[in-house]
Length: 133
Image (cartoon, rainbow, N blue to C red):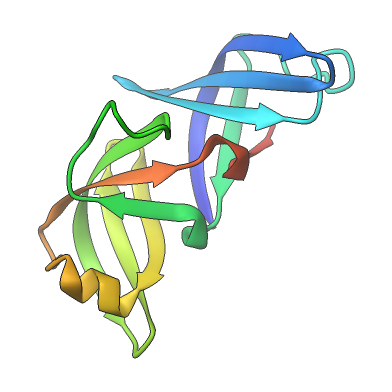
């Protein structure tokens, strides 16, 4: 499980859904959707420190950052270690947010020619991030 320390920078609520914007590090902002509101979840306050959690299987790797991808959470990273098995490879990433990991298809990783030292962008859909106080 990936963990990122962040601060809530903005909240926007519509019905029972809240769009939460997080400031995670210099120039790295994350967004997530919660089925909760500031009225039902007291920790949802601008300025509060929180931890964002997301599974290794929810991290998508790309070889470039792009504004044309509809995933707002894009984290520049460098591959620091590969734990390769037949079907899946755990990719360890160094980022300004701290270490992260992705669990990806080994065949796809090989096809992309990714190796230790490769620069990638870690993408995480906003509905795949959980929040803890």
